[in-house]
Amino acid sequence: MPPASLARDQSPFARPTLARTRPLAPGVVLTARPIGLGDGCLTNAFTLTLDLDLAGCRPVSCPRGFHLRRLVTGPVAAAVSGAFAYISDDPAYQPAEPCLDLAVRDHHAASLPTVTKPAFLIHHGRPLVRTLAATGTLTVAGHPHTWTGSKDSSPRPAPAGHLTVFGAANCRIRYHDDPRTGFRRDVDPAANTTPRDPEALDCTVSPAPAGARITALHPGGGADLFAGA
Image (cartoon, rainbow, N blue to C red; front, side, top):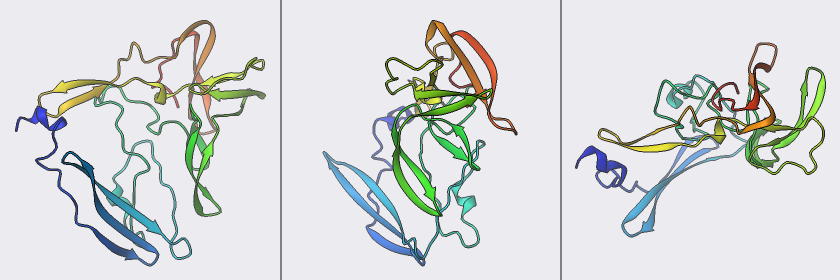
């Protein structure tokens, strides 16, 4: 089968997994099962179940990325990814912050959400999933400003100094046929910007040892969505 057709037909390597349940450690159980989707299509589901009275759970995040298997050492029984998605296959143009929307790393916000949606939280050592509104207050140079995610509706009328949060999650991914992999993804840098608005002043915010700081100003909008956090 030509490589280009693998993007449209995965039957050469897509096979149903064996249905099974396997204890990995006290309080940690892995369940695998195939799910038929009709018309000869299928997917495989893998569920990791934790008894929080017997096992712990902690998040791991790194802007450089890492391999899950390297986390499974010592008492660690398993590691799973919070998300699995590539924005672009172009190594020359990647977002400065790989975690889209809300990301908290080492107790500091690495990026803010552009839309209200569920978030994975650790509260008193126990994992929770809660819907977090993409709104809040940011302090800039000692002055508080309300903010809203760019994919949510801003308040009307907006308070003076109200901010709108954009990020890499606002990008538009393009797909192209590729003779080796079947398809590839990329983002057009020229179009990957905040909206142009003569009344807007966009700020690029980047992480720094003392906390987030504004590293560039863009009067009239047009800030690169991949720059900063």
